[in-house]
Length: 607
Image (cartoon, rainbow, N blue to C red; front, side, top):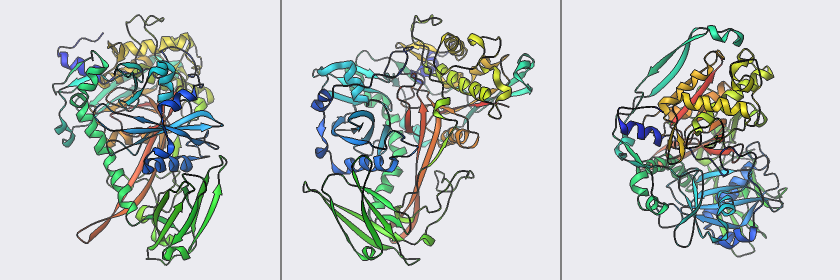
């Protein structure tokens, strides 16, 4: 265990790595069961028709946007469940989120969690496979659960009628004392740690001759006085939730603010409808009728289309527009249940929309453009299609998890921690690339050797075995993981020590980049996304209230431009939505798309 002369620093280190273990116990194999008592689920939920329509539409539109795509390969015939589960957050008195369960042939197949306000991104969490968070909680808690909470990005709780916690998935964040909201307005010096070869290794057969040095740029550890304690009870966490996590909650709200603003700005003049680019509008209820009005009705072809799931879309295709004009269109939808919706659009000529590459946070364009196929980033709200990148395939992922306390070789009182698991999966991924002969990895075959030791070559297995546990436990000790509140915890400034595992095994090296106070940064997102896009290598990221290290191996983005006017002065504003696809380190359970915010980025290089 690491010793530290400043106890608060050790405590803060723990706060940045109190890893949840997902929806199964550490070191148990395979997927969580996919069966669930749907009557019990429906009993606690509300009918779909009672959900505020704007949130229902957001979920339905996401489902149609990704149906049949690489983003959601299991949702070709998916539908939204007729029951929706409200979720709460301890610092909010009203419903904070709505969990829309997704079904394929009446079986659970993922979920969409929609924010009920601007405290989080409009789509807060979604996955195209497995049970929803509340379905998993009900498996654990049974029918006595009455209320569900979304505590953190990946932490969920089921509560009894008396306010007791019955079940939790994702782990509970630790109590943080001393964070200051004013930090969000300060600029912190970036921290970057990398291992640089001074004597290179041409092939891992000569790994023992390699020499590397550590280079550190920026402050390695925080100088702010932050203290960490555990929670004595779920009730105590709820009581002091705002005090403990207020800074992180405000950071999340600020990250989401641009998306909420551009949602509103796009609705005012109407979403862009570009000539020749069909727009698919999800229909919420059966027996839908539509009516087009306004000048745009003369140049737009509507068509009702039935999806493979049996649901319907209204496909709008503009076939003519005068360059330099914005032709208004109004679409009125009337349903058999009496609900009426109105949607505004503006028809745009192809000449009036621009290119191009992924915009940066300031609206400028990034240098990377490989794979970008959209040439119509619409003005006034026309979304580009999603542009996606993956570092390898899903099948090349290593599906590891934390080692339970008492399970050899774990001799500690807690699980082995998500930091070590993330590195083990990344090293295992690199070793698999070497076995496949994928450049530049063939010379780096030594990242995993027989039984996780220093001996002869072996290919890192898909699932965790004795050798993987040996590798994970060695990494765990090198990155100084602590036991705290029953969880393994690893400080970001210790994560680069994972390079010690590679020493004498491989010429590969690692680098780490982080915010010393756990605040999300654009540059850290860019480090991780660049690794996936440009080098085709997964990257470790940091999610939640400073709690979890998953391995990101997919990245996607789309953007649109809206017009903002103040006192007759107007300008265009570009919004970009971004997600990472992550391997959670929960033995393959609950892998899926998460938000792109991160306070950490860890990378692997072949050199």
